[in-house]
Image 1 (cartoon, rainbow, N blue to C red):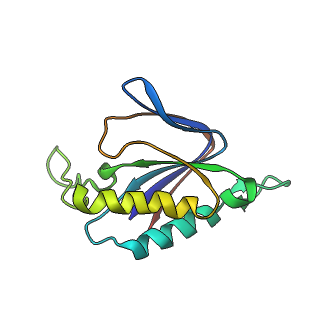
Image 2 (cartoon, helix red, strand yellow):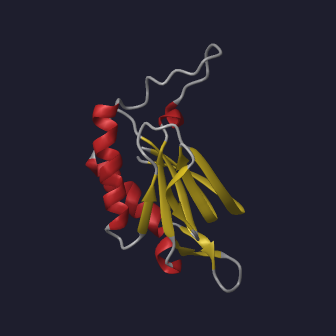
Length: 146
């Protein structure tokens, strides 16, 4: 699994001009799933993300986690995170999991993050979505499962 995390003061995902998910302070998580991923990667990544210290403490240092600040997570599936553009002019997406694998793992990831007590909002798997965000910092981090 591969995730791009962005620390946000707000984020919204729309489908056909309708808001389907929104958060205030928290993390926008763009989530890519590979064919070899499993529930083990889901658990590892959820635990890593909710505990990463990406939020400022009283001294302005990144010492607080999503759990510490009571932040939310907007989680959006993004198969293009596994795009390979090393050859040619069109990326290859053969490293992205097919929907039969990716959908159950995406839903398991939403539940795993929520099980930590984090408010979770999401996009819709496979939909054409518009994502709007205010990246604070800016803070953007890429996290991959081992």
